[in-house]
Image 1 (cartoon, rainbow, N blue to C red):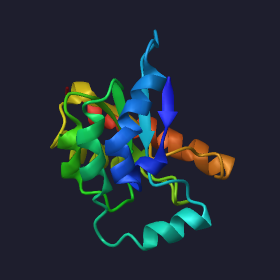
Image 2: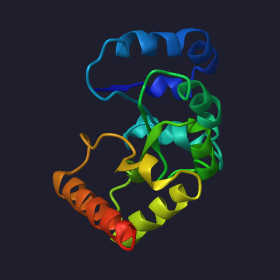
Image 3: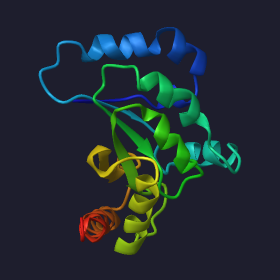
Length: 166
């Protein structure tokens, strides 16, 4: 079960004060794997404009990941590909499994398998392989279907490239 909470990247005081407790309450009693998805949103105009105002370094995860590391969620899903998220924040996820966004959903450009492999290699600097899950940055609902399928093929092929030799 995955809960999506993009507001965790905006309301830091609330996340610290009651957001993690609310997340844990929602996840309590789940008899399946649990995850929380914190992203910067789809490639829709409002989100693209917001991202343009964040600057060259998106440090929101530096505030949120240490809090999420203490939550009941088994997995944290975050954005990395095509963003200004500094990869070193991945180290702040505690012992959680991290679904690393290796596909940028805010762009129609289709990543190559080598692009995906490179993002995985970047994540490997901060997380061991057994805690990396390859994912998209966010959902692909507003995206052209052919582009979305091409991006998912690149994800699969890039993950395969990254796994060769392990």
